[in-house]
Amino acid sequence: MTTLLAPAGSPEALDAALDAGADAVYVGLLGWSRGGARGELTRDELAAAVARAAARGAEIQVALNTIPRPRERAALLGELPRLLDLGIRTLIVNDLGLVAALPRRFPALRVTASVGCGAQSAADVAFFRELGAAAVVLPGTVGPEEAAACVAVRGITVEVMLHMVEEFLLLGKCWMPSYLHLKPTALPGGVPEGMRQTGSMKRGGVGACFRICQEPWQLETGDGRRALQSFPSRQLSRLGDLAGYVTAGVGALKLQGRSLPPAVLGPLVARYRRAIDAAPAGVPGPEAPQPVLPPQWTVVGR
Image (cartoon, rainbow, N blue to C red):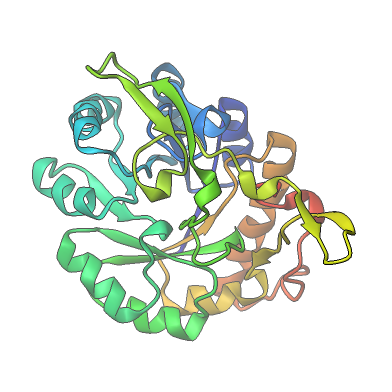
């Protein structure tokens, strides 16, 4: 059975995703997730989210997709018993060391290797299975036939990021040096030496992504002409291929977009819900042939 995994960056967005039919919703925990306070929940909000989701028969997953420094690792591990007490059983992790360590240290946790881990092939999927991951997320650039080969790797669930924004190199991997900001912020929980530099989560250390890529860049020509230019932002949707992923046996179809407001997130989730419900019966659905989504559904507003 293929499930729909939706994002939520606020309690209101969580309600919108659940109302639209999400089987599971992934959220960020304040201080330990990419994107900073724009798309993270506090511990109290997370506890309330777990209760609301459980009442709907849905699951809350927590994205801990930072790459902690050694002194931050203990603080992160200290959060996990509290998450277990809340009923969290699935973590989405970007750090390879944590992917390997968490299942051994916390057997009750189900660890998903984030799309930022870079898996794209059956060999990659097998690697993460041996590492200890219970699931792995493939980018939407991997088609249904390639996904079927990955699903053939037994002992691990394959998920596909069906709706996402195109990255410059590899989804979830920012390699822009200008992301780095030497602006210290406090670590959560009163950690000793509790100041950290902020910058890209994906380049080491934890902090907030400042989305430098969304700022216009000034271009100059040899004759002195200047112009402002923004990086292209192409949102990718494999909605037209959804039935193929379901037939391939993909365990979950995941949507990117924890920065989306509830009014935008709800219709987006509902559209994929209708397509998943129609797929087993072989019904293409009225919107399935059209993979291009409205501009307002851009995943991160780049």
